[in-house]
Image (tube, rainbow, N blue to C red; front, side):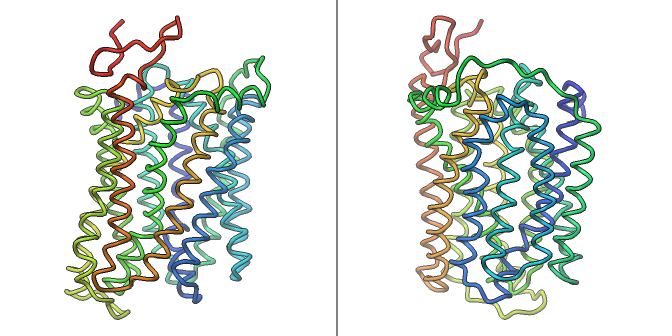
Length: 428
């Protein structure tokens, strides 16, 4: 991991530090938001809607922020996004009503929309041929921040959720200042393509649209790290600490597994086959919950017990499998995106990609929230998890088909796809 970090350009290394801080601040708050809202009396369906709106704001608005990064440059967008997170988490310290929580959640998403495509477009250009390794390392440092965030949050939540949000606000204030002082500016190439022409190019790129549809399973499933997994962990164990256990298991696998898993798959399979495998593993992660959920009753609220510890094991097993899938799927999806899209309009393509992701994630999040509310115990408890399993398999099937038919291969200078019979790019 250290050798991969040292092999990156200086600006890319700075982005790794930035991502660590971003996830540290973010995961201080988000893992505990569902529990906080539940304590305020909100139903799982309402919580799912708030989380879906946050994701919709983050992924949907990238349609505009990605295009802005192409035209204004990635650096100012990264700085602005961190500054908006200061405002978002500051708002969480002041509100408790549903409209206020929705506003704070959506502002959190807007901030992510501003810096998300910019970070990836900057890294895509800066890392060059080491993109897969760079995005895998970005996952690793992100998971490291996601590990420390919930641990610190678990300590602070015992005092008050508003204290957790206040500390996150301070983290993003430091990040904003750091990006202003340290992150180097990059030349912004002049684009001959207008905003509408860029959007038209994306919307008429059929293989990109198919790729975005298949890849939308990633965010639809990843969002369950904040909804289905923590809700089920707390239900069967009876304690909020189980939520931290879910995130700790996820982040430890992400820290130590992202780079080795990416290298292992890259050496053996095409990028498309690797991404498809990752999506299938993410969906399979909900299999243990579907099997065990119907047999487990709601645990009484209280301290850890032997029964609660055993009951949460299927959730942790599913989380482990799910996280292996995310570690495999994400780096290859980020590597494939400029191949099916365009490096020239990298931010615009990232923006549209995240818009499709957001729409799919919103539908899935609301559906899962409703299913969790309706089927609290008994045989029906398997339904939300079986639904998520099917989402993962559907996304994996579409990406696998695109890979096998050569639709993910990079274009040759003549504009044609260059593939072997297996769907891999031809050498040279």
